Image (tube, rainbow, N blue to C red):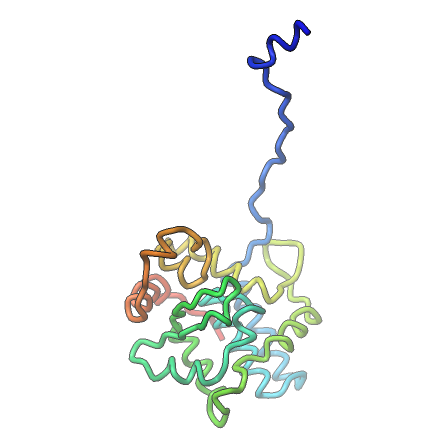
Length: 217
């Protein structure tokens, strides 16, 4: 009973929290270029046809430059959506809520190198056709096992988004613009009730940071 008299003044022992580590999965510009080189090599060796070569190359460039999620977004985008984006003076993809993991409609700028890559895929395709062969490309990457330069593992589809996130720190990409395009950390009150980005400013801010980035293809 005498110990209970001190209950208000005593703290229970606290469990030690696990130390948090930054990810060891580092994805660099050279890793993206290695993937593009492997795609070109597979085409030259006859392992994939021209259509899949162009499609895999376009997925790689779009994913690396935009950071969109592979399953929730990239796999669902249609030819018609890209066709409409390319009609704009400043090409911006209008991604509907049903093509986003957190169901947030948002604009996604198309880097000039992405524009060049997707144009051949649009010709002769219906608007309702899926733009990218995402499941096929994901399987090809798992079978190809392209090693990451700074991690003891191989490249996967999700590493395209990881590259975009990590490159943003190097480029010092505007946080608000980045979070909006990647729909990352946008659950706050300011995003739900106050922010309403427009297509042209979203593109202008994006291209300000990414215009000098080019991949060797």
